Length: 444
Image 1 (cartoon, rainbow, N blue to C red):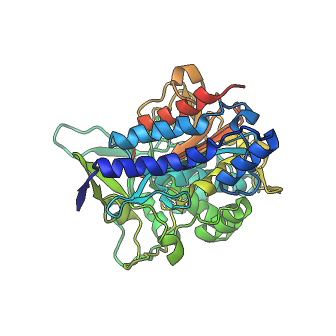
Image 2 (cartoon, rainbow, N blue to C red; image 1 turned 60 degrees about the horizontal axis):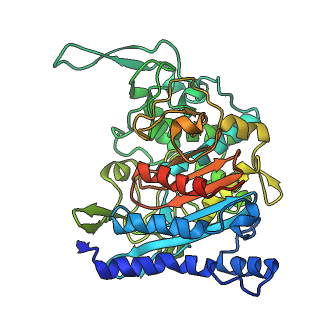
């Protein structure tokens, strides 16, 4: 079913987008600085360890929110976005949190800030943190061969060019895949686990060994190409093995609960399911509501039927649902060198390793980001090496990743800032444009 995004809807979306901005534009006449800050605090959600503050108190232009509202409304009016939620924190203070556009186009319901988004590959930075925790514990090393944990991946084969019109030939891999290869997308393990024998349990433990039957796209460590699903799923299985915990339970106990991510999960409660953002695709001048995931995602992440589908396969690559609030806390933990709510989730050296360029000049962004100038790659995140060259709005050393449906979050240590951009339409150029809006508001 499609529905025209007519003038009435555009105006309704604009009204919703402007609501938060209006709250920020309360007149300061006759108010002390403390009173104005208190007014700002009332207009923003209460997030533990991220007290609300005026943008100018942390070196950002006072009109940050109106600037972001204007940017988002431009994209909504142009038909690029249906709606979204954005958030910015700097120096441990929340300075922007707003909803934009429409949640339910058919019903004319405005977006709200408590909505859950399908994170898709924005799941990967969480997997990076889990892997780093196991490295800290001494249970795994980046140099470990993956076969140490999953013997079926010991003897892989690699595609080589065959004669025109003939099937590709294969040769033995020159060396085994390492944990570092998987964490940096340089393993060549880019196929999908779709030819699994019927009756195989829908779990990482049962299905990941079949990755040994896949053929590598290139010799390990020689190139960079995005392993959208299988590589990070293998890493999730490694964490299961080294921690002796199921992947979903590991994430809940070791990351989500310590960070305070109360709405982040693979399986949702009925109440959470009711807050999931519908996904729309633009078809001509109308929005089409998608009934489900893209076909490949459905094939890879089997769920039960019904109004609140559940799964027993918990990927390291995609599949999480979450909110702007939760990922704001996650990125804030990374900005604070692994600490949040007085609890240490990662050591400072682990956070540093996460955004260290580990691939030299191999990073190409193939399959994920078209623009890679001035960028490198760390542990399941891209990292900025040169701000001017990359043409982005992030500082040197800033790191993060995005999802196939449009979510993007990042940590920027140089600018002491974290950004959250939650939408459900993928336009990589808008990620960069959003960053530039924020960068343009930085004063000191």
